[in-house]
Image 1 (tube, one colour):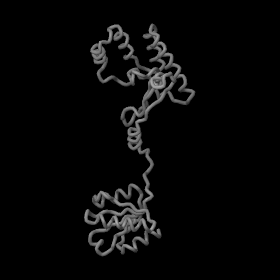
Image 2 (cartoon, helix red, strand yellow):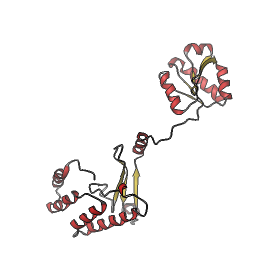
Image 3 (cartoon, one colour):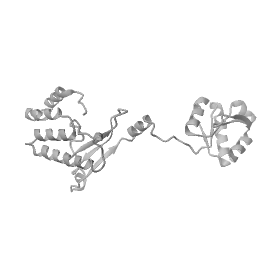
Image 4 (cartoon, helix red, strand yellow):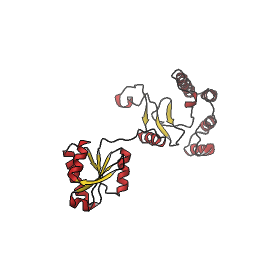
Amino acid sequence: MTSLKKGIDGVKAELVKREIPEAAIKKLLPVLEINGSPETVLNEVGALLAESQIGTEGVEELKELIGYLEPLGVAAENYTIDLYLARGLSYYTGPIFESVVEEPRIGSLTGGGRYDKLIGMFLGEDIPATGTTLGIERIIDVMAELNMLPEAKSSTKVLVTVFDENTKLDSLKLVKELRAEGVNAEIFLDSANLKKQFKYANRLGIPYVIIMGPDEAVQNLVSLKDMNSGEQKQMALEDAVKVLAEN
């Protein structure tokens, strides 16, 4: 059960501030103190709201919904009834829901509910509907934290590094020449230190890296490194292009 940040006293103060009738507050607060299994929660809420038609209908809807979960193979430990949950009170007309993960604690990943009258606001007739939203960034964050994402691989055959700003144009010309020979080549335009560029190649599984320093550029030489074996050789530019084109 989720806990309210303000506690029961804080909730009562907020309701009073919003000029909610005292009688309504007295009925609401005991509901917020109920916890336990879905069956327990629904039974106790049903008893407290027995005189409320809306409350009774809401309890019956949730009982029906919970009754569908077991036949669908949803384990009891994977769902709960959270009486603190609130979403879009102006348009939801039935049960609302959110999905969360225990670890890492990042908040809800999805959220939605029943909104039978929302579409009718635009079409002029009510259409029964239910739906949810997906927090893509949160889902990706969770998957990354739990190492669930597949290892990123690139179709690039060689990464042309940028030694410094003075050699960037030479690196760009080399990329053009490699591509003209049918070699999938990529350039690291950030001109960061070479260590960072090597890490980038490793992370994406790029098999070769070319290094061209200022002295090498003048002599039309490059250093070609095999990222799998770790072997690095200095050679003429045209020889490096030939090696990459043939492998």
